[in-house]
Amino acid sequence: MANEVKRLIQVRVEKGANFKRDGFGKKRQLSDSWRKPRGQHNKQREQRKAKGALPKPGFGSPVAVRGMHPSGFFEVLVSSEKELEGLNPKTHAVRISATVGERKRGTLQEKAVGAGLKVLNPRLATAAQKAKKPAKPAAAESKPPKEEKKPLKTKLSAALAPKKEAKKEKATAEKKEKSAPVKPAKKADKPKTEKAAAKKSEKPGAKVPAKPAAKAEKKAPAKPAEAVKTKSKGAAVAKPKSAKKAGSGVKKDD
Image (tube, rainbow, N blue to C red):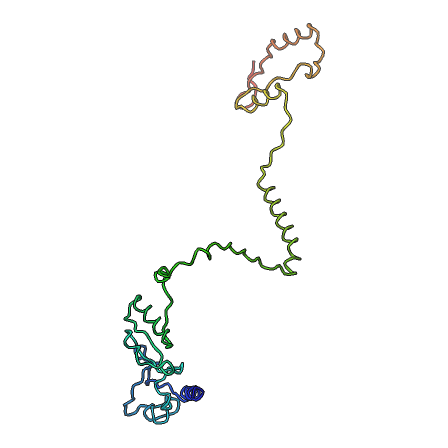
């Protein structure tokens, strides 16, 4: 019988058609839920090609499987413990109502499972329900903690391990070199006299120090005193003034 039910459900799936209203893809406000076309020139009503099928005899599912859940059970909506009475676990499946609270749902779900009924919308126990469970005996707690299993190293990972270590060492060495501050090279100490002269030359309007006498050029030999005197006398004698020319350029008669 179970195999026959499965076969009929498969027939229902293959035979079924999706009937969609005319023009549902043209306007956003129209849903694809079925509405019978009543227009005088409606192409779907006239059964034109590619305009969609109309519901007709022959599209119905087999009577034995009609209204059955795809899991092969007839669905029953339940909201209290009394409604679980008289249900057959071979043919019926339970769906707990959405209006049932969390505390009541837990007890209802446990009773349904205890009676051998399939729950179509089960929920896991919450943290509050887990806290109510009795604590485990102390003997179980006294067991030593299990050691964490380390992943087994493959041949590839074992071969690549030394290369990775070498790369890490290089990277650390480069970081240390970058982080270490570079000390500037010390300049040779100049003598105090040269330092003082350099500071004076840098100041604006400072006089340049005179060169030492030892480095001065050799002086020319001194001339005799008589020659110097004659030169001074000659400079003192005034030269005779020349007669001025007339405007016409001819000298006047004496």
